Image (tube, rainbow, N blue to C red; front, side, top):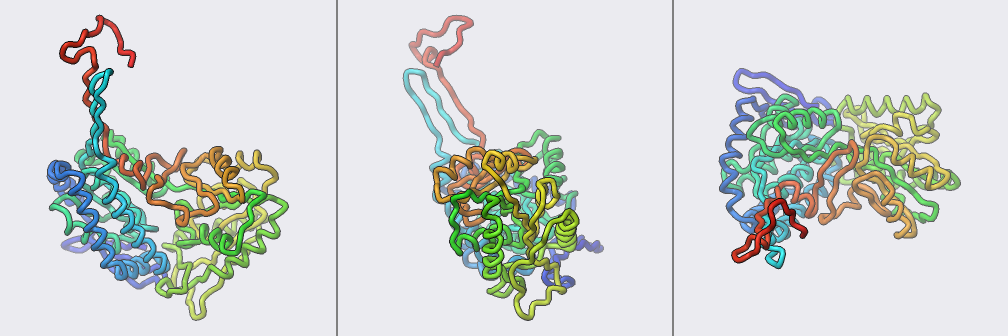
Length: 490
C-alpha cells in the first residue's frame, strides 16, 4: 500500500513492500497543486525548442537514456521487485524491454516522422507531423518502468515535452529511471509529479496540457477521460480487459507450450492487463487439459520471496487486491465451481508476511460468474468448455472489454482466421501475454478497453498531429482555375 503523511514542510507517500507488509521501501514527495502547475509551465516553456531540435537529435537523446537505464538495470530491478512484489527476474526482463523500446524509437522515429510531398498533375500536397506540446502521462504500478518508458519514448521522439505521474503504489524505480532520463534532456522537457487522484486530475485537467496518455483501470479511466474532456484534451487510454485464451481442437501443446500458457495467466501474480484471464477448451479435451495444466503449473509456478531467483510468483500489490481475489474465488465456489491449487510454495517462504495468494484454477463455472465475466487481475483463472467455434465466438466477444486474446492451433491460417472474428485489439497466436509482444506491433484495445495504440509506428503517431499544405493544380501559376461552385474530382 502507499501511506500519506502530512508534515510541516511537505507531504510524503511512503511505499510499503507487499511481500513484507510493514516494511517501508522508500517514499516520494506528494506534490501540491501549485507544484503541478509549475511542472506543466516548465514543460510548456521547454516545448518549442525541443520540437525545433529535430527528430534525429531527439532520437539520439533516447539512445543515451537507454544507455543510462541499462547501466542502472540491476539496482532498478531490485528496487522494482521490493516495491511491487514482482519476481526480480521479471523485473530484469521489464527493464531490459524498456531499453529495447527506447532504442527502437531511437532507430525508427526520424524516418517515421519525415514529411511527405506529392507534386504531380493533381497539384502540390505536403504533409508533416506536429507534436502536441505538453503530454501528461499517468502510469500504473504493475509494470511501471516499461509502461512509462513506452509513453516517454514515443512522446519525446515526436517532439513533445512530458509530465509523468506514476502510481503511488510503485513510484520508486520509475522515478529513478526518469531522474536519469532527465539528465540527458534540456531543463523542463521531462518532469515528474507524485500524488493520488487529486494530483492526477489537476494534471489531466490543466489548460497547459495538450495530450493525455493513461494506463489503468476503467473506473480511474472514466475520471481521467472526464477531466480531459473538460479541456477538450485528446487522450490515449489502455483500460485493461478480460482476455480469453482459446484452444482449438487441433492444438497440440508441448510441455513448454503448457508452461507458457500457465505463465500467461500467472506472471506478476495475474496482475497484467493482457494476461490470459479465461481459458476455453474443447469439451472432449477438458479432462486431459486440466491434468496437463496442473502438471505444468507444478513445474513453473513457485510462490515465494520476489528477491529470490527461483521465485516466479510473488504477492499481489495490496491487501485490497488480495481480498478481491479471495472474494471472487469464494463466490465461484459458492456457485458450484471447483478451485484447484496450483504450483508450489518455496521452502522457507513466509506467505503470512505479505499479500500472497496461492494461484488457483477454477472449474465448473458458467459465463455469468464474476470470475469469468470480470477482470480478476489476480492469481485465479477459470477454465471453460465449449462445443463448437460458432458458440465460442459469441461467448468470447460478450462483455464490455476488448483488449487482447489468443488462439492456439496447429494451423496458423485457421488461427488467424478466427482472430479476425474476435472483438479485441490484439490477438496472440500460439502464445499469450508478454511472450507475444513485439516492438513493431502496436498494442491497444477496442470497446471499453480503451482507444489509441502503444508500441510500433502507430504508438509514435499517437503523439503527433498531421498538418498539410495544399496547392491544387488548377491554381498553380498558369493554371486554368475552376468554375465557380465546382468541386475538385481528384
